[in-house]
Image (cartoon, rainbow, N blue to C red; front, top):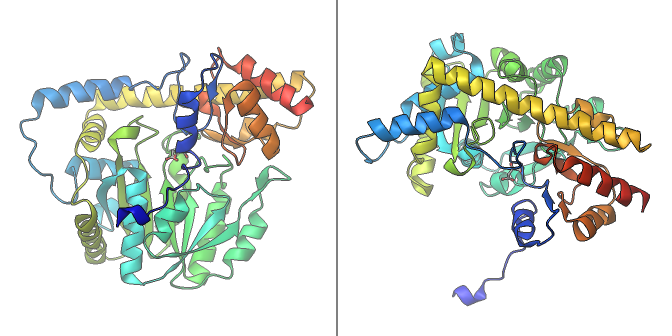
Length: 397
Ligand code: LMR
């Protein structure tokens, strides 16, 4: 039977990491997959995470199964991070969280629950979006539609076009919105735009599904939540897929959660029970370690303060690299990259041609995604000159 299978081409992002590993050029730079690198070029375990891990190792007494919803402290921490510790939505039980294996697991379980409620639901994705959104949602039988988002010519969101397209939605549609640090463009909605989108959700009746994978990496932990918190105050229902891969540096631990908001605490619990049942059919329950780490950090004021300091350092280093890159390009007379300074999080499009992306890879061993998305968080003061010089040569080539 298995001999009938065909091999599948490498994933556009993860496949790039594999190609990078094989490259023998000593100057090679990986600006593909979205992982944070520090000044030494490595992806560190955060100090708060190390300390929490030590504590867990000392106190953990059993490896028996977790409850189906996962680590209770993690789910509480997730809701507090997303909505604020004093949120009335939490107090009133209107929001519920089920731990999932990373942001992908959360998106997929959310999609499964949507499909159980209404088979074949239309889900609207920004164009462009993270490539893995498509298989995650379509794999649960949702029907993906696109709304215009990033205008490559102007290096900015085309909000009018986005709103015009979403005016075609109706009750029973789902609209996926990137919470902050839009992947792949780095261009985020302003608070006013979130409010206008919320007005439209109320008018058209669609359900927002927020992908919150980068909280804290745009402007700050609280600042980054403003858009979806404002939306959550007003819409009758909403889903959020939350991930701790980036802001806790827990990538391989697969720590995420699917969160449901309804206006009736019993209804919220019903949605959570569906999520747990969907998970039971696929992987039973989430892994413990990442959730235990996040729960430990958020419940300990000293560890939380340590984590917040590190998160601020990460964000500031990325923003420093944004300016440093554009300064170098400006100095060489390539002044059309100012948008990189103001975009958020790990990613920006370079907006170069496919051939130039390939040339960067072939001639300079610089790896960015084919869409021209580059991971700014992979730049360091040791590789930025090589990267800027390579890009300038390719631009002038
Ligand atoms: C990315 O966009 O590079 C990350 O979210 C990693 C991934 O799984 O694609």
